[in-house]
Length: 372
Image (cartoon, rainbow, N blue to C red; front, side):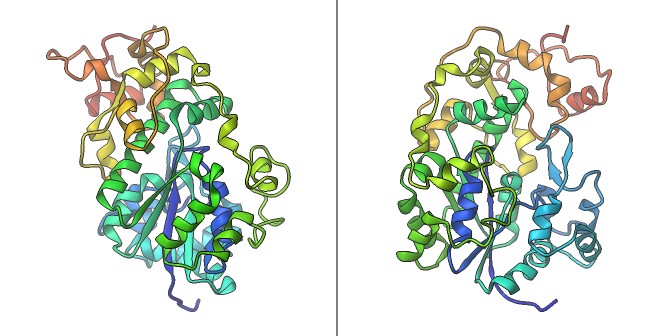
């Protein structure tokens, strides 16, 4: 394979936050390539110094953390195929790599040779998990993080049959990572709000062009129109009238955010968890966070949202405890009720009768009650 030089950008964020729409906009710029998601570099461990790159591709299901209800989500074979790389080929080549940047280069090069562009974006929502360690390890790398108001993301996940605590945790953890990336790497980490992307796409496109160092103007307009992307009609993840994709594909200027449901429609237990949950610092350190995680109210305000959900009925700690085994399948996203953080006397921890329970005890997470 011929070596070519191009800039690299990771694109990620919470689910249903506009990353697919943004990826097609990026791919419509004549200097930028952004294909369908591959899920190959989203594990934060890949971006540690002296990481054994090949070993991550040998993990069960390979290497994306906790996105689909199991401990490891699989990379997208269709996404890799669009990039003109097979997974077996990638796994074989990975034994020669010493950094995750080399892995990313290898996966992107075939398509970049075909496209003849200068900026390559790898869009996979779980990339948010790797953003902090990736930006630290590779000073030339940039990141675009898509975000959205909490209740809207949570409702979307619940429609996909996610458990309520899982939906809340996925949004809360990723929003904390977005704030950490912005505060630590402001010149290399751009936050894109779904509400801005859908209500004022041209302004956002111009901002992205400036961030990437590519031409704006008519080319920003091409991003909004999206007709220049080679993915249209080829990539099954965006082609045809498929789910939510249809709305923005055929009505690019529609103010989609105006159709957001009232925040009161989130289930009471979701509102209770949003009000009471706080992420554990040691859990977020896995993703490179070095500051104390924010609660849902603080992280919303830090990113320009007003936390307008109401306190639901029910006990947040009970809901979290009842869901412990399910939550521990998502080993990196771990939280506890905010009110329990300042307890002077540790609660009695649950009996570790399962693998999940053993992880719970090892990470020092306590609960004041048992699942019934």
